[in-house]
Image (cartoon, rainbow, N blue to C red):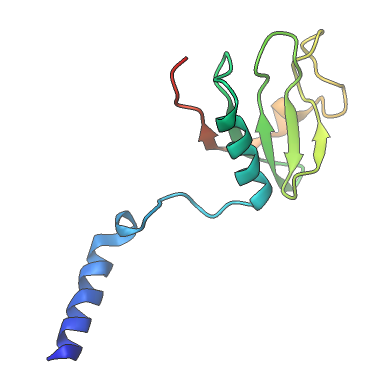
Length: 118
């Protein structure tokens, strides 16, 4: 009878699908998890912080919009290396190293968004 119970348990888990898992988040790089932890340890920014993932220049990149006035955004490669500041800063145009980011980016997905209230 024990094998039947095991099979029934397995079948129930398959039917439950991904919602049965402890988390529904896709696996993410350690540096992204560390950045999220750092943002969550800080006071809520205005606007609230978010991390977006795009496809850009044949690679996945992570974009962190500016958290406040006159601050640049940051674009990271998949390993966490800073590529550029696509926008923001005093001019609103970033650092000029990836001026085509807005036009060439694709496949936007939200990685994380701070949902805490101010």
